[in-house]
Length: 403
Image (cartoon, rainbow, N blue to C red; front, side, top):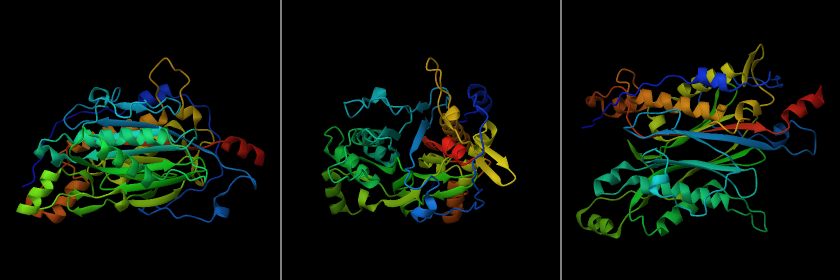
């Protein structure tokens, strides 16, 4: 039988506070068209000639402002402390794996955000430790957090070789998995993984394995999203370390231990635009919120703060997003657009997980496959969200040059 536990956690919207902290200049409206499609769809890769807005021969450069928010399964969500503000100029620690005391309070969920070498490319991702390992006396957080730490270090230390080969999302996942397997302190465990690399030229590559995933928002619409990989209901693909003793018992008594590999991940390519929002999250979000729920939160914040602006021709993006994504006061904890989005989404997922009256995506799936269970409401779980705001450098200057 399926069972669930509820732990009521009230959450108040932070939009009023964020409005007070963010004081952007009046944005100019770029010449962009509204995307009206609200249905889920993978992004279409257009020919390069359709992707260039700048003058012939010019190179488009993108920057990425990121933040994360999280909440452990049975902990109260605190929007002032359960947040991580990414600074691309902070050095990744040379000791590749943090001690447990230094981990974020995200339970078995883990995340990472890192610059790729000495470039402006950014690598980031989510790993959700497989809770079933607890039945074998294994802490699933050891695998997921170490996995993310190793990927962060690999991305930060990466240097393109003489042939100009760049780091890929799948190869980064493989590097992190190999390092975990070589870690003598981790004898067993597993996790799902959603790993991405956003390059300086506005290209995004995602390697997704399991039921963590992402949604890509553009101009008040869901532009693309990932599909979960599962072997069966509530049994996602997962990277694993399975002790030889377990394999031997399975061979004698029957049964099998799930163990998938980075080569099994779905890899997708996407082209980014100025003002796009990327939301990567663990299943603690996707089991409790639909893509349209995420879009509503993003739309409310983006339009409320002025980063997106409604016009007769549709939604427009502010030409300069820096007043929203960067903070000038370094003496106080920064309040940025990306951190506000991450906090709002994590808080909404936390509230939905403890709501027994509104059926979320997980409840819908249970009712579909196991109608006799009479499952209603949300699903309590660890929650982890990474939000990235995409900005095109020189967008304001490009617009002015055309006037």
